[in-house]
Length: 212
Ligand SMILES: Nc1ncnc2c1ncn2[C@@H]1O[C@H](COP(=O)(O)OP(=O)(O)OP(=O)(O)O)[C@@H](O)[C@H]1O
Image 1 (cartoon, rainbow, N blue to C red):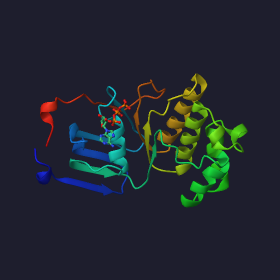
Image 2 (cartoon, rainbow, N blue to C red):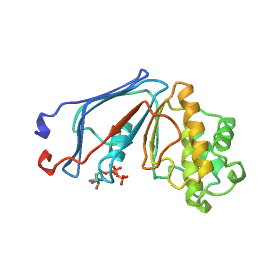
Image 3 (cartoon, rainbow, N blue to C red):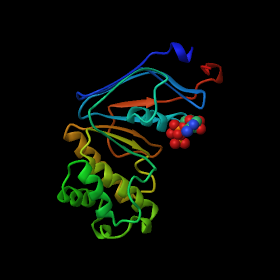
């Protein structure tokens, strides 16, 4: 394999998430290759595999934050990535931090209120995010995803730090997104309370497959 010879294509629009012969290299290491899958509106996919195999890298690649080494990817017109980065101003109360994004996403204050309620954070709406616990911070990240209105939710370990009730509630929010024709691709070591239409089990590739 040769980096110069690799072909790659990225397109967007339409309803589906579709990957064909998708390969990813990070730090000069081939993480996965020839990944093929499609998710249609209302479908959910689960990415599994051991630590370091490339689950987060796949989600970041789909989000457009990493380039594929080769292959093609077609993404819906709008997506939200929820990972361990806090894309919210931690010095602001939750509702103000969400309203910043709401304005950019053409959402209303009512949408913010609904997202805060969906994450069971009404009692924390006026508390600055820097005071939140681990699970509360995770719920704030999820609230940002609920608010986005994006078709495709890319969720990296969405149940991390959540208590049992919050995991169940996350399941309800995921179901509701699917019922509305949304698509979910989630990487998780923890079982999530929804049924998946597709499981992508990534396995570590032999070093001999290093492309460089
Ligand atoms: N910025 C980077 N530069 C080079 N290599 C990186 C970078 N970020 C991650 N990697 C490497 O890419 C590989 C895949 O990382 P990734 O985070 O995608 O794994 P993962 O399957 O999500 O792991 P985990 O289950 O621990 O979350 C790892 O070997 C990691 O060290």
